[in-house]
Image (cartoon, rainbow, N blue to C red):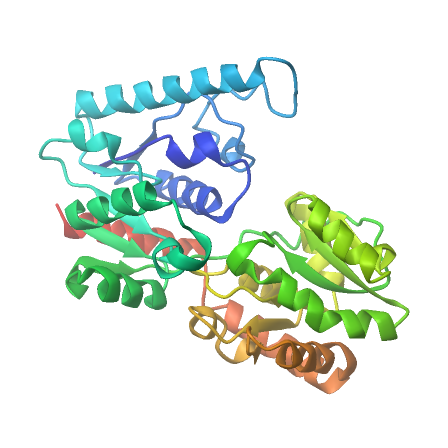
Length: 367
C-alpha cells in the first residue's frame, strides 16, 4: 500500500501540534514493510521534519533574516505545491492524505481515495467571536469533509462536533488519538525561577490567557517566590502593558525552547495550566503527564476525554474557579502527589505507535 502526503503543513508551520503529528505518523508508517510512504516536500523550515531520515528536504534559510526572504519563501511555497501536484498526477499511490485543508488536489486526484484528518472545529464554533472573515477556510474544510473517503478525528469530541455541524455519517469518521513526543532521557537544564506555574502555546483569542492571567494575578502578587513562565510566541505590546500596569513584569518570564529544555520545564513546574476554551486534542496535557507535572484544565471540549482523572478541572469562564484549582495544585502537597500519579497512569493510554496502527487500519479499510 502506497500513501502520499502533501507539503501543506510543513510548508507553513515551523512548530506546532499538526506538523508534529504528521512527522510522528509518517515516520512510524515508514517502518512498516507493508507500506510505502512518500512526503511531497522540497523546502521546509519545520523543526520536526528534519528527524525523518528518509525525507531530505531543503532548509537552508532557517533562522536567517534578510531582505527578500519573504519573496524567496513564496517561491519555495509555490515549488512545494507544484511538486505535490506532479506527485498527484503521476498516480503512483493508493491513498492520498493531505496535511491541511487546501482543496487544490481535487483537480488532480481523480478516482483515488483520500483521507482527511480533522483536528478541531474551532473556526466554526467560535466564528462570530474570534474568526470573522475566515469563510474561505471554513468553506474549503467543509468541501473536503464532504468529499473525503474517510475522516480521522483526533478526539471523540471533534467527531461529535463534525457530526453536529455538518451532519456527516458517523461511520465515515474514525477517532485516532495523538500522543506525546518528549523524551525523558533527553533533558537540557536551563536557568529558571525555583517555583513557577507553566503556560504553553498561543495566548490569543480562544486560548483564554487574559482570564487566566486575571485569575493567577493575586496569587503572584501575594506569593513573592512564585513566577509565571510562558512558552510560545513573544509577548505582545498589550500583554507587556498589562504586566506593567499590575507591577508584575519581573515575575512573568518568556521562553522559546526545544523539546529537551521544554521537558525540563515540565518536570520542574509546580503546575501546568491549560485554560483554552476549546482544543481538538491537547498534546501538552500528555507532555505534562509524562514529565510528572500536575495539570489544571478547562472543563471544556476534549479535555475531560483526554485527561480523565489525571487533571483537576476549572470553569474556563470563571477566574475564581481557575484561581482555586491552581492554588490547590501548587500549595497542597497531597493533591499534587495524587495528581502526578494519576497523570502518569493516564499517559500510558497514549502512544504514537497506537496512532500509527489505527491510522494504518483506516487506510486499509478503504482499499
